[in-house]
Length: 296
Image (cartoon, rainbow, N blue to C red; front, side):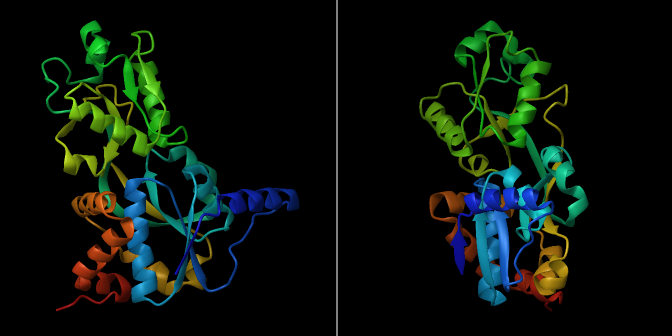
């Protein structure tokens, strides 16, 4: 089992591929190469896949961490084999459109995902239940004019910027604070510890919903999208090289409640431990994913 951060190598390979007029291709070295983002849901599903492929299927896995755009580009160019966190049809639409002709979707690893802006439940719904309510001067003052965001390359950030425009929040005195997934969670925790008001850009599944009592603000304009799914995207040709891994991924689905619980374990302990626990606690399910045979 090998874990490497190859973002610099990926970028170099992209440059070489462009200069040569063609796409880089994953080496036929018997190693399963999986890209992933530093997002809590991707960390859990990616580590579950890695644990199964290494511990249950006996193959070597190289995990390659990069930002979403680089991971999509690497799968599309054939530089890595797959990733497990293609949020479709809306959140990652821009990333997907650039590589759609060169990738294969193996279907969702989980469903009923969503994006949104969330507040702690102690914030009265009578004062703040919708994004429209943010334009109230009293609400803006309690929030210090801030919407707590995540990373600049995230699909949620792109949609949140659209929401800022659609609801006229810049004119109302708000700023979208660009941070990171962990930075957003830390800011939410600080606010909750002090029972301050906070609006966080977030998503489900997320470990925060298991730890704190949060609710989504209504989005009457539908800017932040609706129900989504997280697909596994593989490079073309992956099936021919790793048919057993491809078929396992094709059968693999995890209920969103299990994903969320696993993410909480990952945040409290480690994602390696969360993956080990989930796989070892679901032997019949994992056996079906690997073999396609239903246990009696």
